[in-house]
Every structure is written in C-alpha cells, then in structure tokens.
Length: 136
Image 1 (cartoon, rainbow, N blue to C red):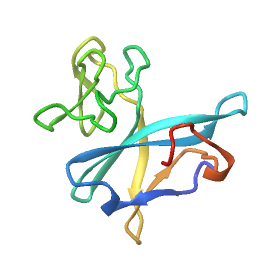
Image 2: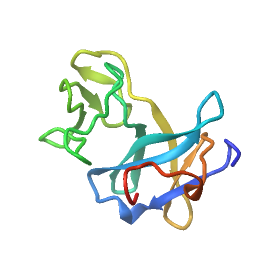
Image 3: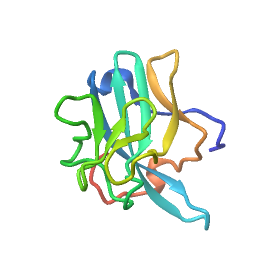
C-alpha cells in the first residue's frame, strides 16, 4: 500500500460518540519488518481524531483500562500510567510529566461512504499479520 492512499479502518458508526476506540494495525518499521501499530480513534459527532497509543513520557500505552482513554469528565485524553492529560484535538500534553510534548497524530478523514480512513501511513494487510491481541 502506498503512503498517500486512504486506508479504511472502520465505519464512523463503529466508534461511539464522545468515545475512543483502540486498534492494533500493522505497518513496516525502518528495517522493513512488520510490527504492531497500536492506535486509537476518537469521535465527537462527525469530528474524528486518531493518535498512536503511546505516551511521550515513557512510551507506554495510554489507556488506563483496555479501551479507556478519557479522563472522568471526558474532556481530555489521560495516560493511565502517570495521569498526564492531553488535549483532545491537538494531542498536546496540558498537565503532567510530559507537559508541552504531544501525542503522535495520525491523518484521518471520513470518506463519502462514512468510513474512517487513515492517510499518510503505509499499512500491512491484516491477513499478513497477527497482532497477538485476539480479534481486532
């Protein structure tokens, strides 16, 4: 797959409104090996954002329970390891040990069929990769 192509990962309606959903996709690293790529997608109405599921503080996953990314008010992304808080739109850390750093954003758009698509990344097809996470 070319990096400038769109890659549909799910339908808009597959992500509950005002929630974040984790996914483990596959891509090639700099050495050409196929590696797991944990991401999450946030949705508010038709506004969608996608980020790598990796805190810039210590490279840990962000979700404090599987699939739980938002703080108790649902207004910030919260790292489950150290409590850092990130802006929902920009991914910038606004409180915590990595203040001023940001999550790695992924270009995302909704296509004409209502699918959430990633762009700017070269993904590996699912049947070539087993994330070890069970059914994605």
